[in-house]
Length: 206
Image (tube, rainbow, N blue to C red):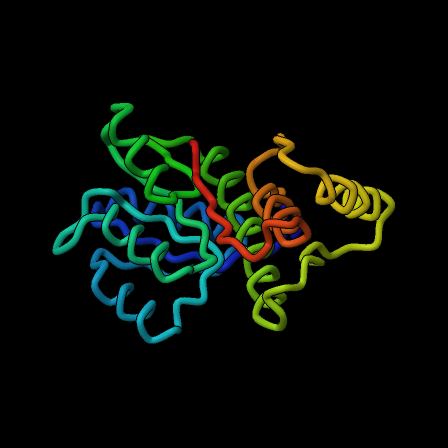
């Protein structure tokens, strides 16, 4: 997904001024978006299977139910949507709670427009990779070929995974920017390894 690709975004924010500012930026960048101040219908979309956004911008402090609880519900459901948390609380404890719950990123108010824009693009790319992975593992959960692409770098990456998968008790460090597919590489390595019959556990250490 290129930086100028159209992204489908859901904004869940109960501060009208912040919601308007986000909507203005999304419109300026050419993205498709919906906006609400109530998280209950959003959870209804999740349960109905119609939550098809690439990115969700979710306020931590919401009426009826907290943003962190909404985040947890989406993660428990296995949703591939990248969730960006927004809050006026700049304490490390809140940031840690959000990241441990599975947030893709965490922004404090007031946020910078360029930071929001780049995070949305990275989140959309990550969501796209997650959907590709889910589609492939749904066809055959034993299939380790979860990486797509025919470039020389992708072929080299697949060869490296094949080589590492045959090793015993080797720790592997996978580095890369947010949204580039580090979890996808880790899952591919797991599915190719002797431990593929065991559960793959992804832990967000942000």
